[in-house]
Image 1 (cartoon, rainbow, N blue to C red):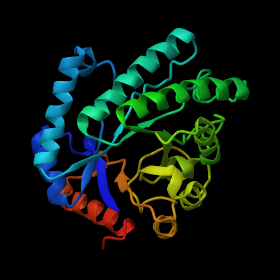
Image 2: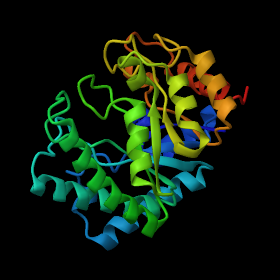
Image 3: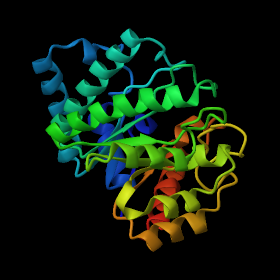
Image 4: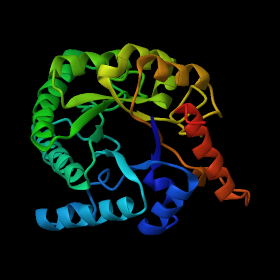
Length: 283
């Protein structure tokens, strides 16, 4: 296994210095975040400019000795997936993100389900299923074209039919593509009252491709540092070994979100990196 962290955890630095510090703290790579917000200068570029910008970022991380382990795809909140036009716009941006991940030399793009009735609606579950199945089947084909695996993420919304890991897995099996797998989010499991370790075991090595690792108190998606909430991290680490997981323990939070008292950020970031390495069985 390897370890990684979201790039936004080091946004107090410019890209090159942030990469250097991430490497110095002991991570193997990063979860790239520039593809999340599509209302940015990056997405306003023409295709050649888009490619050049992403390849330049890739070179920065590569020169620092880091892999781009995974990237998060387009996401906006509240979601806007209600109409055919909304979903067509989403597909265009998602497809561009797949190409962007290929430009980065990254194998995985993490995405959320479409939420046509909002994030907290259990309305017409069969309709929600069919909308997602059609959309994700087409996106998996884009992934196949660019050799990028699209990773479908479980959600923290209790009413949403596609939130549980079991339903995410059912969708992945229905799409039935070598380029469509699962990103297991530990914090999202905890909000639903589910064990992330059980999620790992349910998915198995075949379907589990990427991880989002963070903690919470079991009530809301707080993105606490692992080890500070309700999750049983010993069982989680054991489950990764049991299934033979070969991916990255990728932390989806940062010390910078919680330092408010003048504490030594650098030393706490090193502690977080060491915790990730322990979860990955590297220490």
